[in-house]
Structure formats: C-alpha cells, structure tokens
Amino acid sequence: MGGTASAEEEPLPPRVGKTKTVGANFASTIPAMEASTLETVTGFTSGSLILENPGRSITADYDVFHDKVLGEGGYGLVVLAEHKHTRAQRAIKQVNKAKVKDPAALKAEIDVMKMTDHPNIVKLYESYEDKKKIYLVME
Image (cartoon, rainbow, N blue to C red; front, side):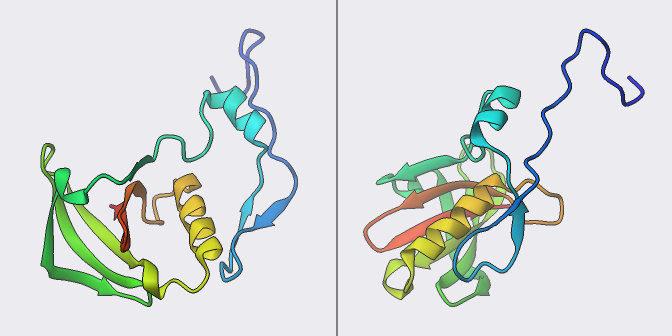
C-alpha cells in the first residue's frame, strides 16, 4: 500500500508521452496509450465493454419516451428512456444519419466517448443502429 509497488506487484506501464487529436471537429486532446499496453494491464481494449447492437431495435431493450425530450442538437434529439429489465433511466441520443455530413468525425467522437471514463463527462453505455438512426445510450 502507501502508493509504492511491492516486489510482488508489477507497476502499471507509463502512458505514452503524446496526445492525439481525435476527429476533425473534436477540439480536445486525449492522452495516448498504446492499445497493446492497455490490453496488457486490463485484458480489454478501450471501449471493448461498450455494447454495440447494430441491427437490433432499441425498443427491444428500452422503453423510449419520445415525448420527454432532454435536449436537441445538430444531429437530432436526446430523449429519456428506461431499460426494460433493470429500470435504469438513460438518455438516448438519436443521431439522424441523413444529417451527418462527416461520418468519420462522428465515428471518431463515438470512439472517444467509448474510451472516456470520467465523473464529469457523460458515459456512453451502448449503441444501436438501424437504417435511419444511430442511438447512443448514455447516463
């Protein structure tokens, strides 16, 4: 304990001393860590625990309250939803694919959201996709 590693514990590998800018319109930078280093430490890659449900209807898992709009943005609406089994309330960001001008930038933003775990930043739990929309399930 006490902040130092004992002879039996291996210290965590240091972060790579660079930052990466992600996405054309994404203003912030994130510390870069090699994927192989992250896999060695945790056994998982960043975002590997975020469920992706392409082709599965969001209504299979969530009661979506389209009349309870939490916000509105350039891509679409954010509405309230409730998980059918756990009853956990979530915000669902509905991204209208027709309004997306730069799909690569959107994908980069979603990838950053998958890697981010911070108490002051909204958490992405899972995503769904159909022919017209991408649904991001957030806290």
